[in-house]
Image (cartoon, rainbow, N blue to C red; front, side, top):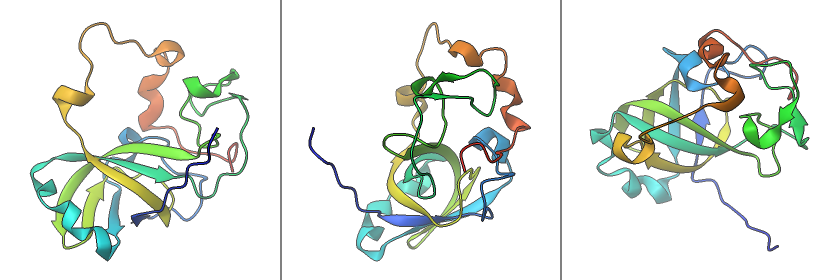
Length: 161
């Protein structure tokens, strides 16, 4: 397969210098504020974003190295297939978070619900649109059904450091 190269369009600023103790998903980061700093060349692309309450951030897990196809995820002690988890160490270290957008200030986005390390390279921004992003009908969460609600209290440890 061909190699694909991405160039960051900005950086995500958060209060988290180390993975240990971080929220593991945005619902566990309620009230945690951050700033998305977009490179000047991409500032015009932020136009009309202020009308959205939430945005999707796609980013690079810049501190993760290597991966395993079976992992014990943060919400379970059972080893699971990597692609059935949100574990940060992946073949393509791409992260995704839905965060609340508080303000667009020039090329800075003030956001809430950050669950990534300070200095995380930003790959893309997309508006969160419930009609597009919330599937209808029978939605299942697999092995996470019994434990998914604990995401608000759980914090990162050193298992993926």
